[in-house]
Image (cartoon, rainbow, N blue to C red; front, side):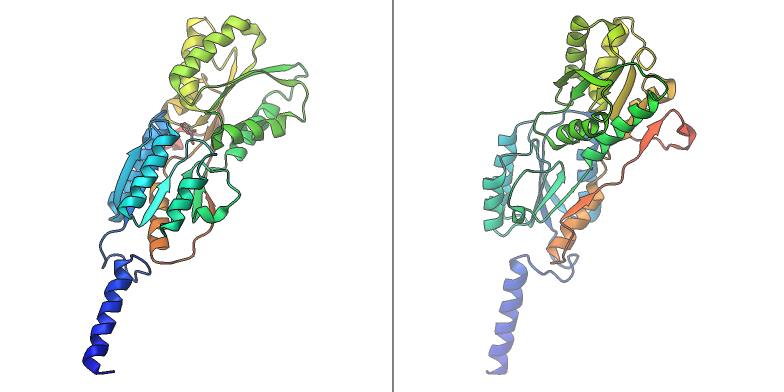
Length: 324
Ligand code: AHR
């Protein structure tokens, strides 16, 4: 082939290759990566921090983010994902409200050749080629940690232990994991009895409402433990307990998940007895994954975020302000 023609063909190939957005050798030389992110809502302190973490990390990583808040409606998430596909973003990431109902839209993303990162919660599917990777918390472990704390807390007595549970959103991964992991542990001990369990959608107002309902059905002396799937619901329940003359953390042992600053303060004051961290600061890891995927690197299919627990023996002076 004539050298001039060969050079033109080579240039055209390079332009087409990079124009498709695949196999970028150095993302800083190319146009910025465009990430479509569908957040499930704004139901809790944890969620607001998680959104901040994602948006700030995108900014720091030089990634252009299209961020959509679905306000607790999975249909809004599906619409957002479809709009990202139409826009031809480089990567889609989303935090699914519930586990089911995603196969069709994720099939559309796959058909369009757009990789998908699942963040925080998981989806329930038999086809794991619908997503490139998933990064989130080990919710089952969080539930087991709650159960193991109770076993230790009540080891000196043989009396029955009556538990009230404030659950998260039905069919969501954290609600399922925290429910099942907890039961995996306490089912070994028949004296631990869950006398009341209801979904509170991870919202403070629902924590209030459900605790009110519980105190209409049960005398406070019949309740030994409140196990709440997140801090905001715990805060709502604490308000109602106080209004009813109950001393939270003393009359009723309280276990809460998330570890927001207010919850750590309550632990320090003895208002809450055990706090299980759920880490919302996934932003930098999501951006790192997005970059690696766009560069064509292999990434692990499932990744977990490191999390801690806090109890009365925690050295509170050593804990940095949580920032949320
Ligand atoms: O999916 C994580 C959970 O969702 C957090 O525990 C809760 O606070 C949030 O709303």
